[in-house]
Length: 199
Image (cartoon, rainbow, N blue to C red; front, side, top):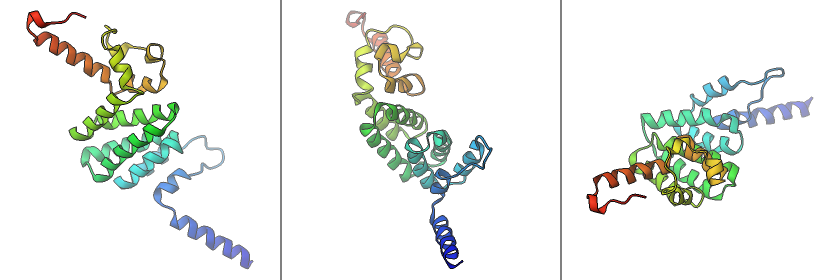
């Protein structure tokens, strides 16, 4: 009996010392319940911004099915106030992207592209610069600029570039190729007639 009490106290202390992020990541579904994503989503929106940033990084690798809940909460927090933890998150996601395999790069690229829509201009430019100089993303954009004539959002990135990590970055939200194409059109239309290029 004494051993059981010790075990109970040990487990109780362990549970009490868990962070809210740990509790979400370790949440177990009751038997017979297929999913409880609504509950996890509600948990996410109860977290402080710094904890949500931690959760987002963790879900990308540990619980991808919770990623979008955490991402929506981070974006909502950023729209209210851009905090140091959000800046740190962007920096760390970029570091993670550089070390990731192609499957993880796809998820990280998606998260960064979503964040680029809500962060302040300086941080957005940091994300854009990273994408443009990235050997996984930028090189494809530069090489395809003068080849593709249709709208980039209609491209099949997988068949054109044969790089699945580039798929979501190109087609979902952030589109460096579209940015280049628009800039090129503006430059061409504003240039003197004799200086225009036609390719």
